[in-house]
Image (cartoon, rainbow, N blue to C red; front, side, top):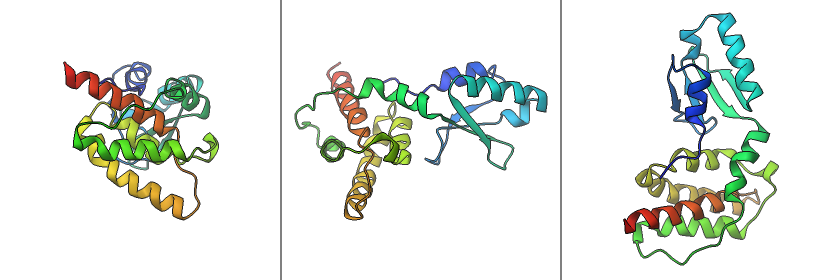
Length: 175
């Protein structure tokens, strides 16, 4: 499965002279060592290019940049996941929590501006890593149940992400 994240695009903007990795924390998508590799003038120019292309970056305090998308870029990334048809319950028992999470999120839509981004980032960063996505699904399912009890909005856009992921997983499993 291919990741929908624009990691290669960011690498291209940063000239490939520094690393761009998926962040381990879910309050950002990527982390880069660009501040260690470029002069202040070059960083200013790169920051402007990133901003122009829909990315935000900030210093982590460890001579690294945290990189995420601005709202317009988020909306653009979510477009392919907006319309989907929920498939049947997967035969593979490992996928049941993924399916349950998808159904729960589908049943509780929320306005985009109110949706927590951390669970969405967590899923997107694991889209191309099936075992990790399968592993995190029960955690996100529990988090979503807690959010419901506390009357907080769910990351309902993630229902589409999971639906697409389940279909791609099933397709690859048949190969």
